[in-house]
Amino acid sequence: MSTLQNIENRFEEQLKTIDELINFDRIILDLCINNIHNLNERLKAGPFKITNPTYLAEGTLKTIMNVRRNDSLRTNYMSMFNSCLVLQVSYFTSNVNDIFKYTCYCLNYAQNRPDLEIDVLKSKNDINFQNMLSTIKTYKKYLDVDIEKNQICNTIILAQSARHAIVHSLGLADQKFIKQTDAARPRDIKHDFTHDEKIQFTSSELEFVKLAMQVFTTSLCDNIKNRHQIS
Image (cartoon, rainbow, N blue to C red; front, side, top):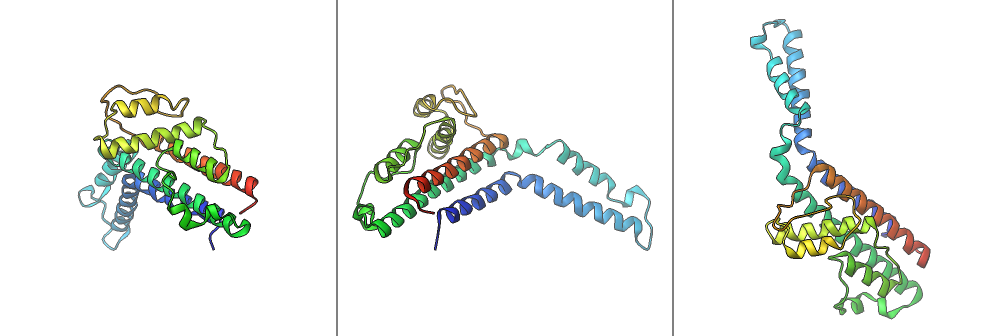
Protein backbone atom coordinates (compact mmCIF):
# COMPACT_ATOMS: atom_id res chain seq x y z
CA MET A 1 0.00 0.00 0.00
CA SER A 2 1.41 3.38 -0.99
CA THR A 3 1.71 6.34 1.36
CA LEU A 4 2.65 9.98 0.92
CA GLN A 5 6.12 9.10 2.22
CA ASN A 6 6.44 6.27 -0.31
CA ILE A 7 5.53 8.64 -3.13
CA GLU A 8 8.04 11.19 -1.88
CA ASN A 9 10.76 8.52 -1.56
CA ARG A 10 10.11 7.31 -5.10
CA PHE A 11 10.51 10.84 -6.38
CA GLU A 12 13.84 11.14 -4.56
CA GLU A 13 15.05 7.97 -6.27
CA GLN A 14 13.99 9.32 -9.66
CA LEU A 15 15.93 12.53 -9.03
CA LYS A 16 19.01 10.48 -8.10
CA THR A 17 18.93 8.75 -11.50
CA ILE A 18 18.95 12.19 -13.14
CA ASP A 19 21.91 13.24 -10.98
CA GLU A 20 23.79 10.22 -12.29
CA LEU A 21 23.00 11.24 -15.85
CA ILE A 22 24.10 14.84 -15.17
CA ASN A 23 27.45 13.59 -13.89
CA PHE A 24 27.85 10.67 -16.29
CA ASP A 25 30.95 12.15 -17.96
CA ARG A 26 32.64 12.54 -14.58
CA ILE A 27 31.62 9.04 -13.50
CA ILE A 28 33.15 7.55 -16.67
CA LEU A 29 36.36 9.57 -16.27
CA ASP A 30 36.71 8.53 -12.64
CA LEU A 31 36.24 4.89 -13.64
CA CYS A 32 38.88 5.19 -16.37
CA ILE A 33 41.33 6.93 -14.04
CA ASN A 34 40.91 4.26 -11.39
CA ASN A 35 41.37 1.37 -13.84
CA ILE A 36 44.36 2.93 -15.61
CA HIS A 37 45.99 3.72 -12.26
CA ASN A 38 45.57 0.10 -11.15
CA LEU A 39 46.96 -1.15 -14.46
CA ASN A 40 49.96 1.14 -14.15
CA GLU A 41 50.68 -0.11 -10.63
CA ARG A 42 50.43 -3.74 -11.75
CA LEU A 43 52.90 -3.09 -14.58
CA LYS A 44 55.41 -1.56 -12.15
CA ALA A 45 54.94 -4.21 -9.45
CA GLY A 46 54.59 -7.22 -11.75
CA PRO A 47 57.20 -9.90 -12.46
CA PHE A 48 58.99 -7.72 -15.05
CA LYS A 49 59.16 -4.60 -12.81
CA ILE A 50 58.62 -2.24 -15.72
CA THR A 51 60.04 1.25 -15.16
CA ASN A 52 60.36 2.56 -18.71
CA PRO A 53 57.66 5.30 -19.16
CA THR A 54 57.25 4.17 -22.78
CA TYR A 55 55.66 0.94 -21.59
CA LEU A 56 53.69 2.40 -18.68
CA ALA A 57 50.32 4.16 -18.63
CA GLU A 58 51.43 7.20 -16.68
CA GLY A 59 51.21 9.60 -19.64
CA THR A 60 47.69 8.49 -20.47
CA LEU A 61 46.75 8.64 -16.81
CA LYS A 62 47.99 12.22 -16.46
CA THR A 63 46.11 13.28 -19.60
CA ILE A 64 42.81 11.84 -18.39
CA MET A 65 43.34 13.24 -14.89
CA ASN A 66 43.83 16.71 -16.41
CA VAL A 67 40.61 16.31 -18.40
CA ARG A 68 38.78 15.37 -15.19
CA ARG A 69 40.40 18.12 -13.13
CA ASN A 70 39.56 20.82 -15.69
CA ASP A 71 36.11 19.42 -16.55
CA SER A 72 37.14 19.57 -20.19
CA LEU A 73 34.24 17.39 -21.33
CA ARG A 74 31.59 19.61 -19.74
CA THR A 75 31.27 21.87 -22.79
CA ASN A 76 30.65 18.85 -25.03
CA TYR A 77 28.18 17.44 -22.52
CA MET A 78 26.06 20.61 -22.16
CA SER A 79 23.32 19.38 -24.52
CA MET A 80 22.57 16.57 -22.07
CA PHE A 81 21.63 19.06 -19.34
CA ASN A 82 18.51 20.28 -21.15
CA SER A 83 17.39 16.67 -21.53
CA CYS A 84 17.89 16.24 -17.79
CA LEU A 85 15.69 19.30 -17.19
CA VAL A 86 12.95 17.67 -19.29
CA LEU A 87 13.24 14.54 -17.15
CA GLN A 88 13.09 16.54 -13.91
CA VAL A 89 9.86 18.23 -14.98
CA SER A 90 8.33 14.97 -16.19
CA TYR A 91 9.05 13.18 -12.92
CA PHE A 92 7.79 16.17 -10.93
CA THR A 93 4.52 16.31 -12.86
CA SER A 94 3.97 12.59 -12.32
CA ASN A 95 4.83 12.97 -8.64
CA VAL A 96 2.33 15.79 -8.04
CA ASN A 97 -0.32 13.75 -9.86
CA ASP A 98 0.39 10.67 -7.72
CA ILE A 99 0.11 12.71 -4.51
CA PHE A 100 -3.22 14.10 -5.67
CA LYS A 101 -4.65 10.71 -6.62
CA TYR A 102 -3.50 9.09 -3.39
CA THR A 103 -5.04 11.87 -1.28
CA CYS A 104 -8.31 11.61 -3.21
CA TYR A 105 -8.36 7.86 -2.67
CA CYS A 106 -7.83 8.23 1.09
CA LEU A 107 -10.52 10.88 1.47
CA ASN A 108 -12.99 9.01 -0.69
CA TYR A 109 -12.42 5.76 1.20
CA ALA A 110 -12.43 7.20 4.72
CA GLN A 111 -14.96 10.01 4.39
CA ASN A 112 -17.09 8.71 1.54
CA ARG A 113 -16.61 11.76 -0.65
CA PRO A 114 -18.15 10.64 -3.95
CA ASP A 115 -16.71 13.66 -5.79
CA LEU A 116 -13.23 12.21 -5.22
CA GLU A 117 -13.97 8.73 -6.55
CA ILE A 118 -11.48 7.84 -9.29
CA ASP A 119 -14.06 7.36 -12.08
CA VAL A 120 -15.66 10.70 -11.23
CA LEU A 121 -12.28 12.43 -11.31
CA LYS A 122 -11.48 10.89 -14.70
CA SER A 123 -14.53 12.59 -16.15
CA LYS A 124 -13.30 16.03 -15.13
CA ASN A 125 -11.53 18.19 -17.69
CA ASP A 126 -10.12 20.75 -15.26
CA ILE A 127 -7.58 18.53 -13.47
CA ASN A 128 -4.18 19.44 -14.83
CA PHE A 129 -0.65 19.30 -13.42
CA GLN A 130 1.27 20.42 -16.52
CA ASN A 131 1.94 23.84 -15.01
CA MET A 132 2.02 25.32 -11.52
CA LEU A 133 -0.99 27.61 -11.92
CA SER A 134 -3.19 24.64 -12.88
CA THR A 135 -1.69 22.59 -10.06
CA ILE A 136 -2.48 25.30 -7.52
CA LYS A 137 -6.09 25.55 -8.77
CA THR A 138 -6.59 21.78 -8.78
CA TYR A 139 -5.35 21.24 -5.24
CA LYS A 140 -7.39 24.15 -3.93
CA LYS A 141 -10.61 23.19 -5.71
CA TYR A 142 -10.63 19.46 -4.94
CA LEU A 143 -8.61 19.14 -1.74
CA ASP A 144 -8.83 22.63 -0.22
CA VAL A 145 -5.03 22.69 -0.01
CA ASP A 146 -3.38 26.08 -0.44
CA ILE A 147 -0.10 26.26 -2.36
CA GLU A 148 1.89 29.46 -1.95
CA LYS A 149 3.21 31.03 -5.15
CA ASN A 150 6.65 31.83 -3.77
CA GLN A 151 10.26 31.71 -4.97
CA ILE A 152 10.27 27.91 -4.91
CA CYS A 153 7.11 27.81 -6.99
CA ASN A 154 8.49 30.38 -9.43
CA THR A 155 11.65 28.35 -9.99
CA ILE A 156 9.50 25.36 -10.91
CA ILE A 157 7.40 27.54 -13.25
CA LEU A 158 10.64 28.50 -15.01
CA ALA A 159 11.60 24.83 -15.33
CA GLN A 160 8.17 23.86 -16.69
CA SER A 161 8.18 26.71 -19.21
CA ALA A 162 11.72 25.81 -20.27
CA ARG A 163 10.75 22.18 -20.69
CA HIS A 164 7.94 23.20 -23.06
CA ALA A 165 10.28 25.46 -25.05
CA ILE A 166 12.96 22.75 -25.28
CA VAL A 167 10.49 20.13 -26.51
CA HIS A 168 8.28 22.29 -28.74
CA SER A 169 10.19 25.48 -29.66
CA LEU A 170 13.72 24.26 -30.44
CA GLY A 171 14.87 25.43 -27.02
CA LEU A 172 14.41 29.11 -27.89
CA ALA A 173 12.98 31.79 -25.60
CA ASP A 174 9.95 32.75 -27.70
CA GLN A 175 7.37 35.36 -26.73
CA LYS A 176 5.18 32.84 -24.89
CA PHE A 177 8.09 31.62 -22.80
CA ILE A 178 9.22 35.14 -21.90
CA LYS A 179 5.68 36.12 -20.88
CA GLN A 180 5.35 33.06 -18.64
CA THR A 181 8.70 33.50 -16.96
CA ASP A 182 8.42 37.29 -16.55
CA ALA A 183 5.52 36.66 -14.17
CA ALA A 184 7.47 34.04 -12.21
CA ARG A 185 9.48 36.32 -9.94
CA PRO A 186 11.38 36.16 -7.67
CA ARG A 187 13.12 32.91 -8.59
CA ASP A 188 16.47 31.25 -7.92
CA ILE A 189 17.98 31.08 -11.43
CA LYS A 190 17.88 32.55 -14.95
CA HIS A 191 16.38 35.93 -14.09
CA ASP A 192 16.25 37.43 -17.61
CA PHE A 193 15.90 36.28 -21.22
CA THR A 194 16.02 37.98 -24.58
CA HIS A 195 13.75 37.04 -27.47
CA ASP A 196 14.94 33.92 -29.33
CA GLU A 197 17.76 33.39 -26.85
CA LYS A 198 18.93 29.78 -26.70
CA ILE A 199 17.79 28.23 -23.41
CA GLN A 200 20.68 26.30 -21.90
CA PHE A 201 20.78 24.89 -18.37
CA THR A 202 23.96 24.15 -16.44
CA SER A 203 24.50 21.38 -13.90
CA SER A 204 24.40 23.90 -11.03
CA GLU A 205 21.09 25.33 -12.29
CA LEU A 206 19.63 21.82 -12.45
CA GLU A 207 20.60 21.45 -8.80
CA PHE A 208 18.50 24.53 -7.96
CA VAL A 209 15.56 23.07 -9.88
CA LYS A 210 15.90 19.75 -8.06
CA LEU A 211 16.03 21.45 -4.68
CA ALA A 212 12.94 23.53 -5.49
CA MET A 213 11.02 20.39 -6.47
CA GLN A 214 12.12 18.56 -3.32
CA VAL A 215 11.12 21.43 -1.04
CA PHE A 216 7.80 21.83 -2.84
CA THR A 217 7.00 18.12 -2.58
CA THR A 218 7.80 17.97 1.14
CA SER A 219 5.76 21.11 1.82
CA LEU A 220 2.81 19.80 -0.20
CA CYS A 221 2.78 16.49 1.66
CA ASP A 222 3.01 18.27 5.01
CA ASN A 223 0.09 20.53 4.07
CA ILE A 224 -2.01 17.51 3.10
CA LYS A 225 -1.17 15.70 6.33
CA ASN A 226 -2.09 18.75 8.42
CA ARG A 227 -5.25 19.52 6.44
CA HIS A 228 -6.65 16.02 6.09
CA GLN A 229 -4.82 13.94 8.74
CA ILE A 230 -3.63 11.29 6.30
CA SER A 231 -0.16 9.83 5.88
